[in-house]
Picture 1 (tube, helix red, strand yellow):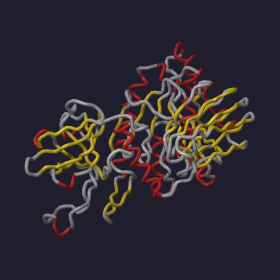
Picture 2 (tube, rainbow, N blue to C red):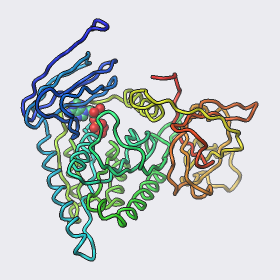
Picture 3 (spheres, protein in one colour):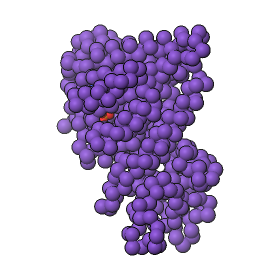
Picture 4 (cartoon, helix red, strand yellow):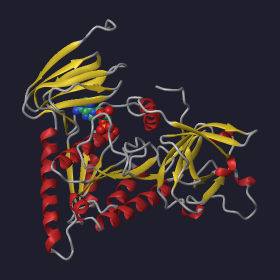
Length: 439
Ligand code: ADP
């Protein structure tokens, strides 16, 4: 254990093409590059400058040519590894880079411009998909490209919160602590941490809704890149869910197809690779590439993943290092309208009017009564102007319901920014956050 207030300085010398793998403890860790050059998931660390890393963050400091790293603080674990798949990853980047240049060159000549690479990263949970996505984006941005990052992983939700699918242009290498920029994000709220979830022992199947939102997102991006040669040439990097069997596999194929992926990167699973290679073999314009999983990827149990979802949601409201304060707002019930899409917990068949279909429409938008049931919910703030536009509308952000006052008919919520909501239509799902205050 550390003596409070004492300094725990430690220097680590990294040989070329090796990395220092760190799990931050319950306290912040400070780190800097003393000598040489090093990067965190594709984003170069400025030399000499101390950076602070928040509790429980797991990351690696990698060097291509050798570096000396200095740490101040106590880590959960830190060790050096000289066996990494980084050379194979950067080779993929080089191929993508060539394709981007080809696409860019075609813009001025061909009548039908060539699309830049559309890369989709697939693999089981904890294979390092998000990490590889970050590297590919940061390396591309470092060379001046502005690729679009698409996150279809509702389990983690790295752009905004879990339960959302989203896209954003990446114009600069990613900050290892701050993550993805939010200001230009295009966000759709799915509302659940998986396409099929279980709430109070009820199975909620939202596979159809998931597909519809993936399609909406793809269509909007398609129009955006059509009008923007720079982003068309830079292409897309798409992160997916770790669900790869059965319906999960079907959803991967759906995403590959919907986004017209041209490169499928399969991480750490031979079987998935050969299945995809087989079904996609007739498509000459799709390359399926197998890549090794890094030994540094930290496996997370279901409980850890659940906790990390909660902290992702907190991060949305409080910032990655707990430095932001969300704004509390109280409005009358009549100022907002809450809706739920599709599969909520269903009424028993006996309670339905005679002749009605017990299988409820998975895409039906139904109004939700405001009552204590909404307490702690995370609601999406829809851009829809009419309720029937809710499914096809993106959201401006999320609010967290912290109080429902049935006597005064008032609802109190936290929002990341001040002022009135941009719309009165709120979308509920099955996500909630029991707020134990600040982290
Ligand atoms: P997936 O997206 O496939 O579920 P992630 O990319 O999120 O997996 O990786 C899981 C965890 O492992 C993350 O916390 C990530 O930061 C960490 N991680 C990935 N690669 C390394 C590495 N080389 N060294 C240390 N930690 C790593």
